[in-house]
Length: 279
Image 1: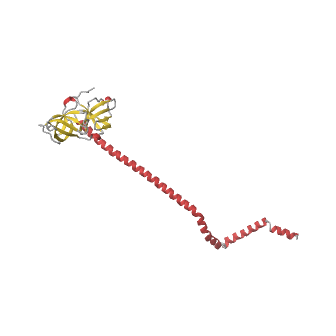
Image 2: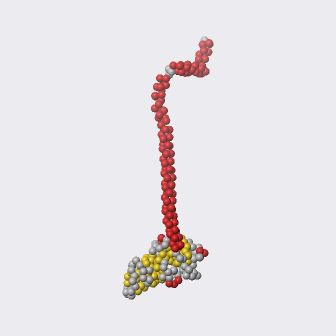
Image 3: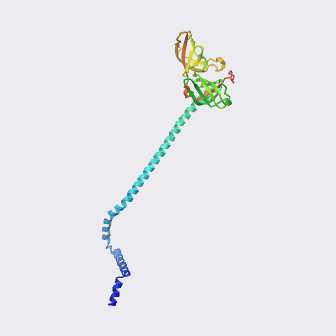
């Protein structure tokens, strides 16, 4: 009885169970390797477990898909922004190149004209424009230290635009010929008639043309050289309208300067030999 009791204790011990299970597993592994007897069972379990595995993997796969989509969208947005920036830079460069080309053409024309003129000339750049009904001025980037003097003629490619009015060391104010306070001696190119041209805030007006004088719209107005301020023969404006004064004792003519004075970017400075600097 005692021996039987010890045998029962041995068979119920955890160690015995562990060894027995290990032995059974070993036999099954050897049998499966040699005869594949558990293959149908594994296949059946695989079919049963596959949906469960798919369900378990679906959140991870969905997360990865969404993450890839978001990354691609972010890359597309970044690439799109870079392309827009490059396009903007290219457009700015094109605009700058067009502006530089136009400026170079103007400067070449000014250089060629300055070489043809029998006068000493220099090119200055306009830094500010002050044009109202009562004031027609521009500011240029040259001044007393560049040899400018008060009353010095200032031209554009289209003709006379004004004269130096206020001087500083490094800049100067130019009063335009359209300023209400400006008046200059002029001459009708076709007939040689001499008269005074007054600024009226927008263009020029000839107030005291004799009724017997033959003037017409389209006549070119040039500097007469009187007063020693402007050299003779420089283009000033073109007559646009001719009418009689209210008392019919004079003719009144309107004249339009050759270029747009509100769009000036460069000007000529002229040093005629016969003009003396005015302090």
